[in-house]
Image 1 (cartoon, rainbow, N blue to C red):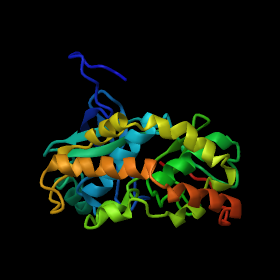
Image 2 (image 1 turned 120 degrees about the vertical axis):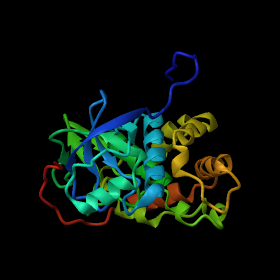
Image 3 (image 1 turned 60 degrees about the horizontal axis):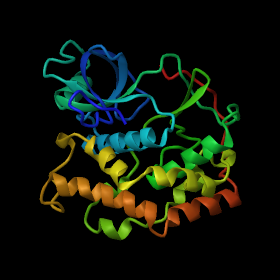
Image 4 (image 1 turned 90 degrees about the vertical axis):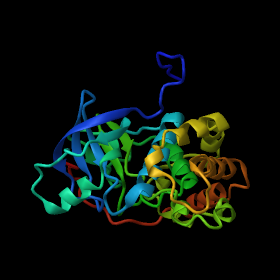
Length: 283
């Protein structure tokens, strides 16, 4: 765990300043873009002002923090700060609307130039241990976006990289009754693009679950900016809102874990068949 100059733990996800809107990425429904930062390199940024809103950024940040804690392959994340003048020269009115609503904190992953989308018909070199770890991770966070139709995996420098977790943790789109849904199964895991390559999911659980201690979960959730939280009648303040995410993850990890049993059973039945597609460049 890194330490800052004050001796306190350094932030799990650093904060950088966006200085130039470089390239829009129109493949994503939220209109992300490559943004140059002030000294930290370019990031693929998802904007708070896009249609998916702040909850998608919360899911991105929590997923990234968990992935870092578990040492899973994810491009370096950052909270990307934008000022009111950012992107003023962008001529597209739709993009201008998004940027006007995105002043302040946004979420970014380090841009991987020349990365290719993972193709399950070709990229069968992924190790069973890594595939199992990613399946386990996605079942834990209820990530619906890792299917053959939408792999959200990149191949870069001969390694696999996980991206796009904004659709995960979908329980938080309806907070009333959220405690009753902590142990909900996750049937979508049967469509996971890596299920057919995955090794022992129970072994992955034994390896990964001890890493997500209460302290680690609090640190992950603490990385979510205040501006993305609040405005939820369920919680009296931001501390209670944050605590709910920690409770959800902790109890999902340490309760009956129907999500894990469901993943194991889906693996026994075999993955859903997919239609191979052509590998393409992301940018």
